[in-house]
Length: 307
Image (cartoon, rainbow, N blue to C red; front, side, top):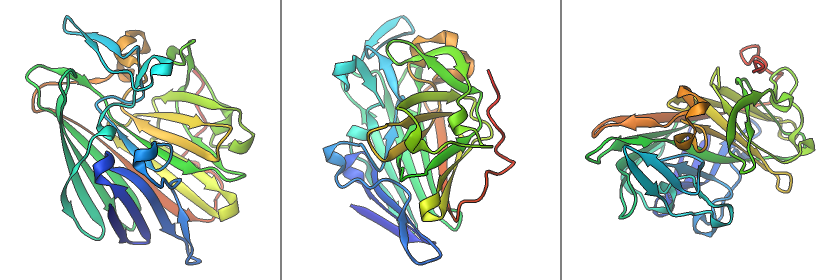
């Protein structure tokens, strides 16, 4: 177990279990510690809270199969009941702690598994500052031949009564019978910055929003008199949102590509995974900044642009 505490934030993570964040808390002006991630007691018992890494791809690949450079690659189905490979493989393998201080940690993973087409190094930088909690992933391709790559982070946030989530994007992709994205998008008023809807009244939702711009989102917790601002940087240009209707949690996941994009060129060039040659890197950051009270949505977060 690894713990950081500085600048009004504290974090616990488990390097042995994919460097999964088990908890993240913020010290409110009242002196109370408020969870900004839904706490996870044990990363080995299932990653349904906290925050985990997604690499070398984010979200789903249909049937765990894709073709690239004349070869067909079959991945293990880690969600066999749905016929999917999901969320990559780094979360299932340990990280080494390269360095650690009271306010930062750097972890690394050398990933090469027989039967999988990727060989890469993954660096995970976790930094606490007065700005908030910054999580940065940097993936470097170490294989001989170029390969497509993707990255993402999968945080689980508390969803007490009255919680809202607001951001701007081109729209949510419509889904096929497998729950995978189609090219068509549609606005989702529940997340509109001008008047976001309380998520406890929202039916089950799972969708990817392409062209997240500006790359900011806001979670408001009225009962806590607190808000959390999410900022994406680097490769994280899309936002995947999951809101179950049977648990008091929500996910707002910054990702570099859309689900199953490696099999769906019709989603467009910005939706795709990134081709890396040996030695090339892909990097993305998520910054979580907690705020007192819950101000009205900022003008810097315009409403969704209809498709």
